[in-house]
Length: 210
Image (cartoon, rainbow, N blue to C red; front, side, top):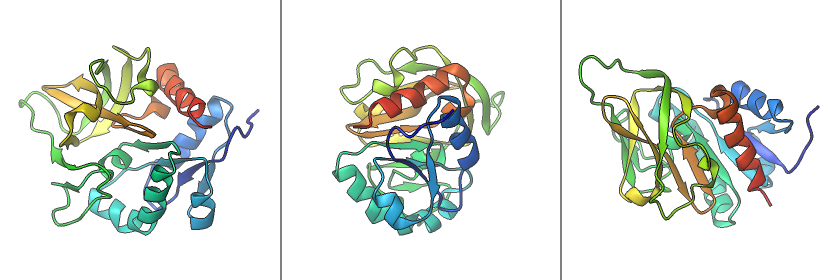
């Protein structure tokens, strides 16, 4: 049985792993909305920016919600980006030259450059290492150090401010795979596909909603 705790909305901008995220919250007993309606999105207590596919295609649709997302963040309401939803928080991406991201964080999204034995895309289960030295918000990753999470990606984030990085994984290189600052969280891996550990991350996100 699912219940509403607060109004949590997955932004349906036409590109995203929406149904799997919806089902992840359903598994923890939390009903979330899926909506492309701007009024409904701006009146939400928490937002989720999902994403699969290319940076350029994603931004083409998400740009219509840029002002709402910025206002949501300024109002100190929680936001969670997942996979491409992480990438689009940054300034730009090598995947789509000339396309501007939401630019909430300065930095670029870059193609994985790995030794030949490592396949790209990076797909499957990898352990994460929580950045315990970060002075920013790592609350979603409490007790997640060395847990396995599920990844599917060919690009990685390169923030200008390294202190926002809240976790890394090792896959032919040390790859930053999560960020946190104040009310913003974003993850390269898919918590909704990462078993009980991933579901616990969704629970922690819900707990942050006032």
